[in-house]
Image 1 (tube, rainbow, N blue to C red):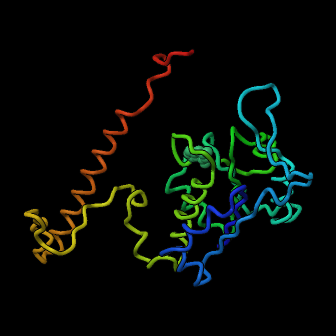
Image 2: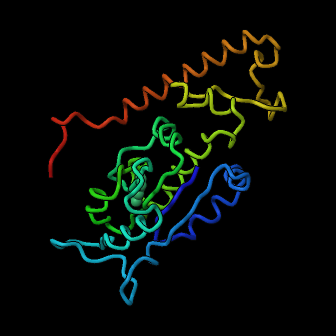
Image 3: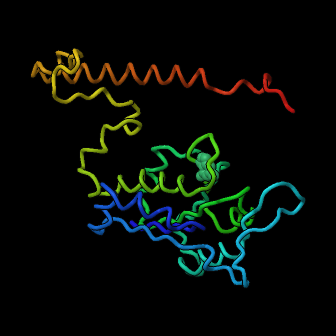
Amino acid sequence: MRFDVFTLFPRMFDSPFAESIIHRAIKAGLIEIHTHDIRAYATDKHRTTDDYPFGGGTGMVMKPEPIFAAVESVLGVPLPPDVPIILMTPSGRTFNHALAQALAQHQRIALICGHYEGVDERVREHLCTDAISIGDYVLTGGELAAMVVIDAVARLVPGVLPPEATQDESHASGLLEYPQYTRPAEFRGWRVPEVLLSGNHAAIARWRREQAEARTRARQAQLQHTAPAPAAQLKVE
Ligand code: 6GU
């Protein structure tokens, strides 16, 4: 699987993918991560990539021309219809495990990292096939968010992890994971639950299921408490 990342800060992607599982997957030829510097596709003397917003307001907006030029140069024209072109922006749809699984079905995906106050809307409308946020907070740019998406998708590519690793994990099965323990059986007076030391595999499976269900219920209750107020209660400034 190949990831093409379009960014003003390509070096940000170097060290996160030079370690651990993703690094091994790249060395094994299972995934490729290609970064492309949007600035290299700016054609004016100063290689300008941003400009003032029409209509006024604070901050700068990323210009459409270098982004279109970069994506069209790398993906080709006409753009391949089977390659998702994703704008990373806090106003996109929220990333989750189901979306990671859907993206992992593609052989290639392109990610465009927004920066500053935003990206000219014509990029989203006429170049991108999707817009993704990684959560309800604002980052200084889309780069860290793109890395999160790449990591979550790459680990689902066959061969990156052992096949059983992605089967029961939190969010895949609809249940959160049960607690895990390793040696020592007692650490600072805290003992590992006895059932795990019992060798009774049916009892262990039952205990794990109960724990996973209890965690999932606790998380759901927490989500209820953080849910937005009903529209009628929201104050409009
Ligand atoms: Cl994709 N970009 C930025 N700038 N902030 C975010 C985000 C993306 N997802 C959550 N916050």
